[in-house]
Length: 202
Image (cartoon, rainbow, N blue to C red; front, top):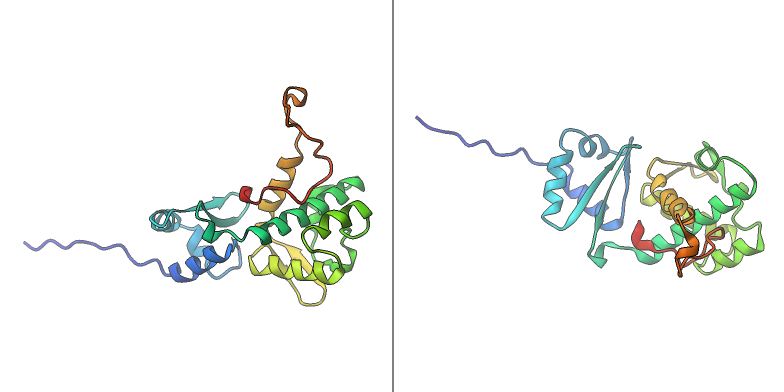
């Protein structure tokens, strides 16, 4: 009696996903790879990339991404720019007393309405990551689009995608007060974002 050994079916999106991981891409609903990556084959993809020392994450808010200890997979300067861009945005929205989530995730936002360059303090912070003009804001948004953080309609309007929650988490966690700041000799005033936010948190 001949026994047949079943072999696992190939992972159809493996090449595209690996290229995306190296670029720092985040996958959300609507991306060609998302349904395959986030569905029943997620654990298969996760096991495959674990062999390459890459950890695949599936966030309950609707996006998938990977992390690695290898610096070759980290775009540190770009990620720092993203985090500072987000932190300034959060700070400006909070100053207006608006709901952060609803404001940031509003549909079809206009680039010219972004508050980043309105305040001197925010402009000084953004200058540290080479964001000085509306054109620099535009370029940052386009970089965010390439990595799956937002959708851009090409007409000066954009909508954040679920993956942007990852950058938002970093900023909100950095601004959260410690349980006992008086007992922490290194505790700092975190009400104002800085350009030294650690990019390896992303």
